[in-house]
Image 1 (cartoon, rainbow, N blue to C red):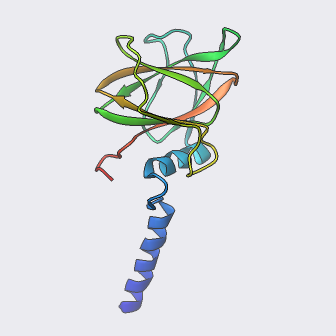
Image 2: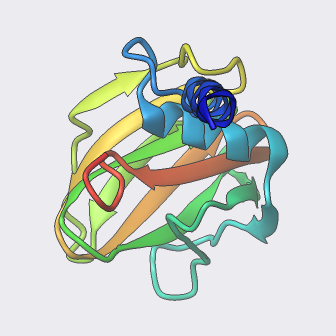
Image 3: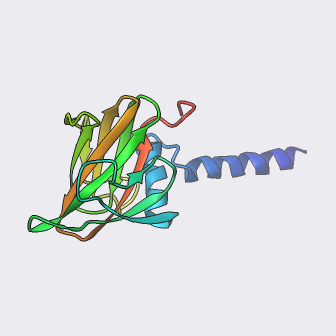
Length: 161
C-alpha cells in the first residue's frame, strides 16, 4: 500500500510540473502555448470591416489560424470576441501583429500589459492582457504577414487557479 501511495504521489508531482505549476511562468501562458503548438486549430479569414460580419474567436482552448486580407500596404482585418464574464483576458499571437481592441460602442480598450514573448514557449510573439466587461469586443489585427495564429484565455481560469 505504501509503494502505491509513493508511486501515485510521484506521478502527481510529475503532472503538476508538466502543467506549469511553477511560479516563474503563468499557467495561462502554459495553456496558450499548448494550443499554439498543438491545437486544436481552426482556420478563419479576418473581416474587412468592424461589424457583425467579422468572424469570432473564443476562449475555448482553440488556436485560431487567422488569414489577414490585404489592407493599406499590409495585411489586416477584424475578428470579434464575446467576453462571457468580466475580467482580464490574455491574447497570445504567434507573429508580429499590431492589435487594437475596441468595445461594441467603438471605444478603444487599452491593454493593461503587453509583451513580445513568453517564458512558456517561443511561439508567443505578442501577448496582451486586456480588461473586459461582459460584452462584445473587436480585435483589429494588422501585420506584414498574411496569417497569424491567435489564442485567447481568461487571465484567471474558471475556479480561480
